[in-house]
Image (cartoon, rainbow, N blue to C red):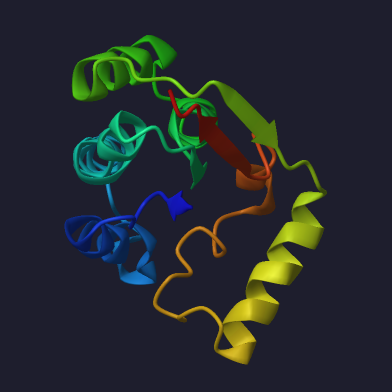
Length: 148
């Protein structure tokens, strides 16, 4: 089990920038590039070594989330999203993706409950502070990579 962003030591630092509400003025292309930088590190350190060892990898978020949020919600060119993914990780794709579909209001309520309870940091609320329409491209997902 792993996650994006933040599945590596370097990824945790990138996650801090991406999710920090003080990064509200982050340019959408810079945001896309940071997600790809995290993914390069994540694939190099975690996903490919696990796959080489014959393990199954389940990742909370992957390129589908990037397509939805940076491509659709941020209105970036999907071809750019796809090209960067192909170049960054040699087009590594999961064997299976689970889309967890729930109303955005319910997802936001759950997120704020985690933040309020201390299960999540209040320094990771940049996306929760977006307009509700931002949540509609996708509610979340898990990507699974086969083990051999």
